[in-house]
Amino acid sequence: VNDGWKPILTLGNGVEISKRTSGSFHTFRSRFLLTSLSPYQFIIIPNTIDAAKQWDPHLVEARYIKDLGDNISIICLMFRDHSKPPFRNREFVVYERCENMEDGTLVVAVVSLPKEIAAGLEPQQNDAIRGLLLQSGWVVEKLQVGSCRMNAEVFCQST
Image (cartoon, one colour):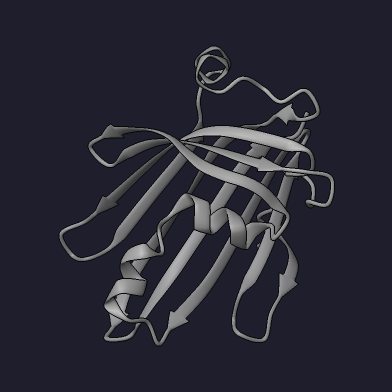
């Protein structure tokens, strides 16, 4: 069954990254198994800033703008010229919500703030394009002591 996902990178450690495109919308999906994790490492996995550093080592700046409580924060992510499309020369102002479920599963959802709210919180840099992250998130499930599975998807619009 061809569901539109095209593998763009498969690494020897079991990481698979796929892409699906529809017009100006790009969807990226990665799947991988994480092993040999301490309890502390398992807890810190669902952090948007750390995840952004893994998506693109050319992340210029990532910082928390405001903590809204109830596991919700506002974050600014800035990527520049050396980043890969669709992140190249973009900045994103996003909500991040992290939930720890009763069974130990961690769920993270990230989405761009509406333009007007983002502009009021974080003025746009002159040399960057304000990107729209339609939806991003990942689920980290504990499998057994010392391992977990992480499924992640990123939906963004490139302008």
